[in-house]
Image (cartoon, rainbow, N blue to C red):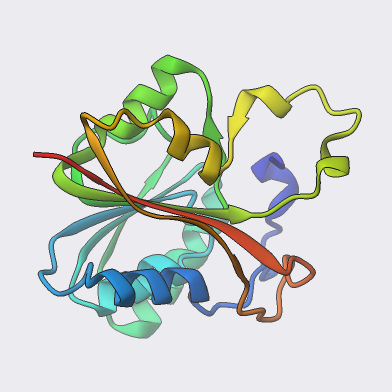
Amino acid sequence: MHPESDMYVEGETRWSGEPNGALIDLVGQLGLANNPGTAVDFGCGEGADAVWLAQQGIAVTGVDPSPIALAQAKSAADAAGVEVSLVEGYAPEALTGTWDLVVGMYAPVHSDPVKLGALLGAVAPGGHLLFVHHEMPEDFFEGVDWRGDFLFPRELAKRLPESEWEILVDEVRARRVIPGASAHHVSDELLVARKKS
């Protein structure tokens, strides 16, 4: 959970520029692009995942608090010849609407009930939430005071009411490692849930 001001530097690229393997695998596994609709990528960063989703025919909105990252995302979309709507802001406050697919790739999800409710409310009935984060060793959290403020995918899965959500994927998988700032992580927690109509 790094402040965005520490993550991006004008003129420098932090990530690989390639879409995350977990996103590609999950969208393919579950056929989430078979009937292209709308998607929002919160914490979209430099836009590689949002651009890939747009290339699948999905109408994509990317949300990120960093104007530097959003400028890079716009450049990536222009270079790929696709359209991605970009919004500067934090999730869930910036998620004003509902989408068929709500994607969070390594972005923080707040445990606060109001913020969590707003995030889950951004998923349209019958739509999907796709949330991926690195699996962290417990000693990673030693000495930090924010551990309880955020949820990881498998923790979030336990909070989704069965009456409202169908869990499709809730597991840990080895990462398809690509160069970039997070290349040292070897496994991810994955959650895909469908909001019942």
